Amino acid sequence: MEENLDRIFRDKLKDNAKIPSNISWNKEIGWHHLEKMLPISHSIFNGKWFKVAASLVIVAISFWGGLKIQKHLSEKTIIASEADKALKEIDLPGGHHCTLAPYSKIQYMHSALSDTLYLEGEAFIESADKRKIVIKAKNAVITCLAAQLNLRANFNEKSTLISTVSGFVSAQCTDNNFPALTVAASEQYAIYEGGIMTFKSQNNDPNFLAWKTGVLTFDNMPMEYVVKVMEDYYGACIKIEKEELKYCRFTSQLKNVSLKEALQSIETSLNLRVKQKGLMYSLAGKGC
Image: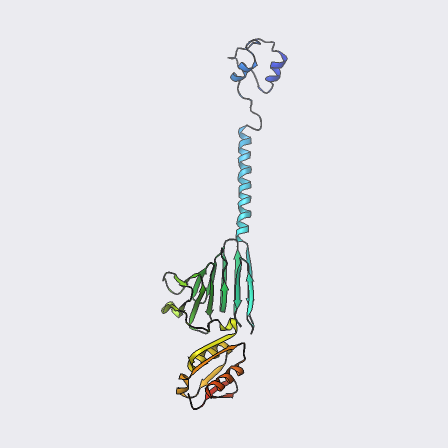
């Protein structure tokens, strides 16, 4: 190999430690022929340590990004709300809406992954179209998506009552290992203590949403039913003095009226007398 390399050749070889002894070069052969035979110069960007460092950087960025995503997904919004003697309307994160009955309360947890509502009392819940909500109340777990339902889970009662208005909901008892049951529109599902007695049936009660609408509807209903509905709606204690009066039929629609006005309507329609003693009311008369 020639000892006097021309300047251009030296510049070309500046990144090579030495010229391999097995390479025969001259100006006539040319640089491109020699270039194919030379070992590749290892700069910092294609050295093995650079590749290792780059890999570590990628791993670190991925780990940091994963932590950020995990933190975002695990972040929760917690809402606690309680109604006093008036019902309460609540817009919930995730697109859901809750109408809370008087003296009822909820705790709501919202995250990027799930929505969970804990209920004590009674509520009308409208779930979002594209995001499900899980409702936990007493001894029941209800999952719904794009549905409307009324849920009654008072701790002083022996059952949790699920009434679906629209859509479908999945209801499961936490006191047994039975599979979840689908409750369709216009159906009711009651879960009793211990999960021993459960039933699903058509909802024929016109007053199950009276607490929300303020309207009591009685269409030729026996007084025994009328009194039960009024006791529940007004939180009152009403006694029918004579057994035969329980079978008297009452027809009326009472909209946003007081207990006194409702009882006066019964007096007028059935020719009964209402007697009051403290917080107790009684219905007396000859009967119908």
